[in-house]
Length: 208
Image 1 (cartoon, rainbow, N blue to C red):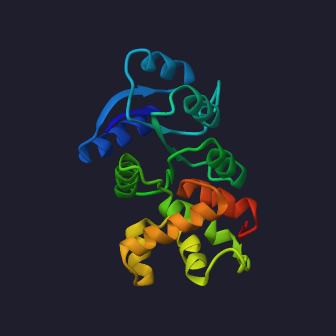
Image 2: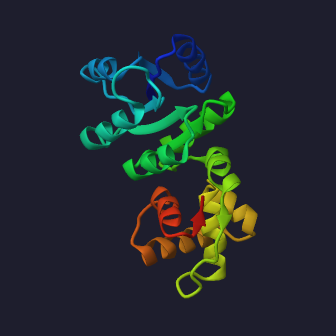
Image 3: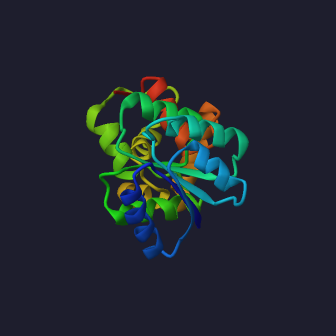
């Protein structure tokens, strides 16, 4: 992956760049704010932008993510931030980011997130587990809409589980997990796991 790091702390950018390079990815640019990022994007189009939310003066990372999804939807956005507030998470999900990792996460998890996003798999992992599930109570799902197995898979998706993780956890085949996910998506008219997490929050499937 060709990656641009957007963070206003130079030392953090240095450490993040070193971690990314250990994962055999390439950092093609660094920016401290929206203006610097726009200048970089005039010369290069990265595969992924690793984006902080709190950037000091100027537009926030949320503003940048919204503009990127409107102007350059082909660029994947992985948020790496200390701001894990509920309102921020909801807003980023609505924008359609591809993943979120807390700055408290170890380097290995950041690399895991980059690899997942590069393969088209939204990544929230322990972040969505800590931010959402650790402070939520699960309500009774609509039994007339989802089967018991589908309910189990929805909970696993909201915890950030990949198809492989869910298959191992539920002792069913990967193909069966994919079939269940297709059915779940069809029932509520969505196309991806990020939309499912947002749907679950908005419709009271999980309460924060």
